[in-house]
Every structure is written in structure tokens, then in C-alpha cells.
Length: 198
Length: 268
Image 1 (cartoon, rainbow over the protein chains, first blue to last red):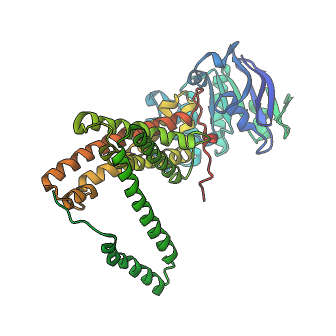
Image 2: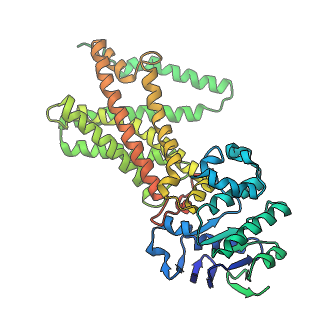
Image 3: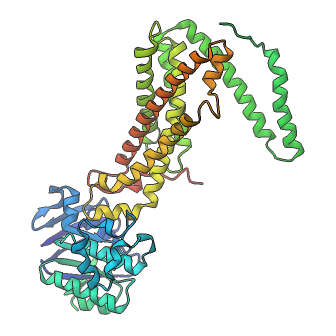
């Protein structure tokens, strides 16, 4: 269970709990601070408040260990090497996930420079899924995808959720929010969240 | 050893060459005459002053005065490093990092040369210590400012890649390593280029000076080799310290990238 209590970052101030195997959709207008919130939970920006995973404070472990368990995936994931394969420790294990998301078998040798935004988004998701994190913080993970690819992503994540992974899924697509989220957090310009059930 | 002494009068004719540059600028409307005049006056004043200051220091042979002169040189070097940065470090580190690293590198290497090879008497004799420090300082400064410039610019440009690595549980060391390598490579490049071209394309200033002063060319070459080795060591040490130090300052103990600590008041 992920517990977030009095998390503060700039104007944001939120508290909530996320059960194991639960997916919450995060909604709100652009610029309201959804990305800031997700980044803060992953401890990628300086922030205040207590965040615990199964009762263990994140400060009790080194930040890299925390982020392997509570993993943030950016809308436009970054790439630090030349080819797709270089970004994976075990590309052979990642390939089945990539093909499930509609990418061809030879995509491992593709140069990152030539990837389309949608290809980057799907490969970034595969890269993050390889960690088998306890909590996934997905920042608009299907914003650059066609409906077929988006559906493939949703079903892949749904599998992880049924295996106990918790997810916060930020999206501008109301229908998607109702499909994936058992609860919906609506973020307002005051930096707080209100909870709706779909 | 004999050398041809110059009087101030001997400089009048060569100085006309600068006047010629000024006339050219006026005729061709380059609008450089004002800058040229300022630069020329600065050069004359600075060099003549340095001549007198060094005369005083060489007569005094005082460890305190020598150390004082060395510190002034380091301060000017760190100011120059900051002036060459487009993006700057925060607060005390803005000057502190450059000053600390040039002092560490150039100071250590100068002491090393004075105590092991040159061994003047006394070891801190300003005739040896200050020119040596000056030459090492100038090159170390170039290495450090290039290394820092590449580091900070790449951190800003490659932010998405670095944060992707951090978000996937990479340490700050893993995430920054490719950029640290690039920065170190850029810092080392000028000294390597000048080592490769030296003697073929250019005769270094110090060696030229020694030859004009009547030193045998082969002896002058040995001196120049000593200096080049010292410079290579100083640049390596200083650039390494500055790049690693600044990579440390621009990340934090929770392995976050802290670009908010870069100030951009140097950005035009």
C-alpha cells in the first residue's frame, strides 16, 4: 500500500492512500500540477511530506531503490544511448512486451533518433515495466498513441494491476479515466485533489 | 647569457603598428578604434605594472608577498572562469568552485615542480614560483572553464535522458556519467591539441623568450617540455576536480537532478 500524507511541492498539497492492485486515474487541466505530483511521489523533485510503501518511509531507503519500487514514467521518456536495445538490461525479456504493444521484432536495433513519439512512448513503457515496480506513476502514457495501441497499453497495465501492482494514471481522456481507474482524483488549480468514483 | 635590452624609446616605432591598425579601422569603418585603444592602454599599464611588481617581489623574496601574489592570480583566474560560463553555479560556489579547483591543481603542480625538479633556493623564490604558477594557471583555467561549460549545458540539454535514468532507479553517478565523460574530454582537448602542434606550428612563448635571452635552444626546449608536462598534469587535475565537483553540486543526496541550482544570469 502506498501512503501519501501532506505531500507538498510548490502549490500542491495532497494526502491519499493507494491499495495494492488499485488503479487511480489522475485528471485535471494542463498545467495544474499532475506531473509535479507524480514526480514528487517518485522523489524526483525536492518536496515535503511523508510517503510510505507498506509502512516503510521512502527516506529509509536510498532514492534509487525507492524509484525501482515506485516508478515514474514521463509522457515523453528520455533516452541516453543510441539504440533502443542499449536501454535494456535484458532485451530478450522485453521484446515480448514490445511486440504486444504492436512494435516489430527488430525494433531493438532501431536508432532512438528515428523513433516516432508514439514508438518512444511505448518503448519507454516497456522499459519501465521491466523493473516490475510495486507502484507505477504513469504520466499520460497513451497521449501519442492511436486507439489500438492505447487499448494494448491499457490491457497490459490491467494485467499488472490484477497481479497486485498499484497505478496512478494521469490522463486527459475522460473515457479512459473511467475505464482504467477504480477511483478518479480530480486535481484543481489550488493544488488539492478531490475524489470521484466513476 | 646575453640579451639585447630594450629602452622605452625602442618601443615607440613598433607601437606605430597598433596606430596603423587604428587608422585601418577608421578608414574601413570597422568601429574597432575605441576598443583597440582601451585594449592597448590596458596592456601597456598591466605589463609595466607587472614588471615593477615582479621586480619588487624578486628583491623581497618573501614567502608572504609571494603567496599574496599567487592568491591574486588565482582570484583573477576564477573570475575569468565565471566570465566564460553561460550558466553559473549558485551562491558561493559561483566563484568558489573555480577558485578552489585552480588553486588545488595549479598550486599542487607548481609545488611539485619547485620541490622535486627545479629546487630553487629558497624553494618559494618568486622568480620561479610565480611564472610557473602563471603558466599552469592559465591553461588549467581554460580546461576548467571548457569542462564546466560543457557539463552545465549538457545537463540542461539532456535533462530528459538523465531523469529517465534516475526514474528507473539509476544513481546520480550512473545518470551523469556520459555527460561527465564529454565534459572531461572537452576540458582536456586544448592541451592535447597544443601538445601535438607545438614546435611545428608554433614556438611557445616561454621558449621563444628564453632563446631571445640567449639560452641554448635545446636547453630552452627542455624547459618547455617541463612546463608542458606540468600544464598537462594541472589541466587534468583541475578539470577533473571542477567537473566532478560541479556534477555533485547539481545533484543531491536523494539522487535528483537539481537544475534549479543553475543560475542563468550569464545568458544574453
